[in-house]
Amino acid sequence: MTAQPAQREPVAAERQRLGELAAVFLRLGLTAFGGPAAHIAMMEDEAVVRRKWLTRERFLDLLGVTNLLPGPSSSELAIYLGYVRAGWRGLLVGGTCFIMPAAALVTAIAWTYARFGSLPEIAGMLYGIRPVVVAIIVQALWRLGQAAIKDATSAVVAIAAVALSVAGLSPLMVLLIAGIAVAVVRTARGTGDRGVVAALPAALAIAPSAGSAAVSLGSLFLVFLKLGAVVFGSGYVLLAFLRSDLVERLHWLTENQLLDAVAVGQVTPGPVFTTATFIGYLLAGWTGAVVATVAIFLPAFLLVAASSPFVPLLRESRLVASILDGVTVGSLALMAVVTWQLGRAAVVDVPTAVLAVGSAVLLLRFRLNSTWLIVAGAGLGMMLGFVGAH
View 1 (cartoon, rainbow, N blue to C red):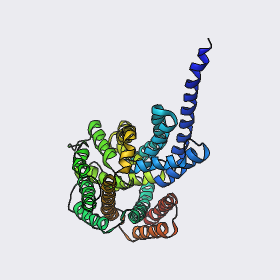
View 2 (tube, one colour):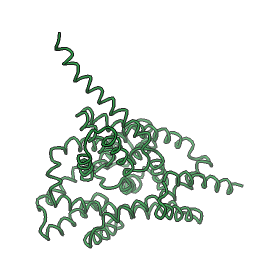
View 3 (tube, rainbow, N blue to C red):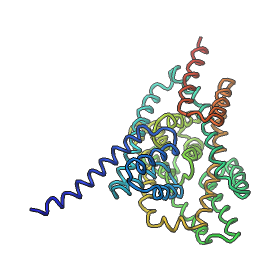
View 4 (tube, rainbow, N blue to C red):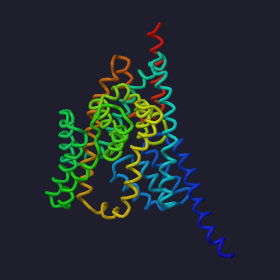
């Protein structure tokens, strides 16, 4: 009889932790605007400062690991924090509760877009939003480039990666070549282990590739599973892969639809990777939204679960760091190319050019919140559409 409370107490404690995790990450999923940097700052405040789930040093360790993995960094950090707080169940609860509010909101917006996107008012909004989105990507490219281009090797590899991308090489191959190039140069200077370089192509080659242009749930799942497994760097790098796969190769989307999907990812809270949710709905309705969301985030859960035992080795390897530096540089090169390509679709006349340049100045010089700029762009687009109609 006296043993029953002792047996129930751990269960009650676990439920309490899981409930706390769910409450925290559901709230973050509904309010975390501003991109990965803002998400990470909010998680640090909740987990370290307010709730003391872990030390700041441990938090920084987890943040460092997320930068070693492909996929959405802030979502992976939420998954890690869930694991630290409540084990394997916490891993699932933390990540899922952070992702699902944004995915649900994006699905609702996609439903509205699919039914009313052709109305003049909505068309005007999108006309004003698209050049602002291009400016936001330019800002991210500038900020990330300052941190990633560390030396002459990085700069040369970035230029070569741009040339390879323009020449038509697939984004995955561009990343592979950039990572190996930086690692080889630094290895030649006496750092690292050549064995890791030899293993890298095999590691990246496991990503599945959809070969059919027909939209089916299976092909949709494989495309977004691949993206979740190979996209390094900022969530904006996802755009290069989306454009390569869905616009150019499979012809599932138009340039404007891709820009609109990016805009939705900007004005909603939570991870930018919920862009996949929007696209999944456009391609295959409610089921497609669920399939695309599960597929693109599944690698993040698997990578976090699998990486824990190897974290110390990864962080101590100079060669792994060099490879990832190269992959990051390649990612920025892909961002630069896709920014130019999307810009040509968004900037179609003098008003959109003014919007794009003005937004870029406000973002780079005054660091204005991108969400407000998108709202302003939508309003100006509606006004211009109304004036043009009369």
